Image: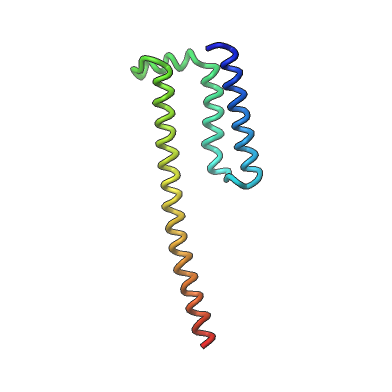
Length: 115
């Protein structure tokens, strides 16, 4: 991998990590949700400088090229993120239903007191 590409990828990931941390600082992104993006950014930076190890890993797994290995790992990462988001949405839906029911009971109680 050319040094210019390594520098470009590293700078891109550093800018991305700064953006993630800035969103956490501004409370636009929770710390819990930012951890996965921080880990991913650091992992990409490490992979940029450890291409030889990726070649060994690709051969060990039975994948012919490093690009196919990276594509596969990216796909697995996206599946994980999608599952995590789905899990969070399910929890939020349960909370919304509970809050809606509680609000309805409070409104009913207020209406009963006014009568």
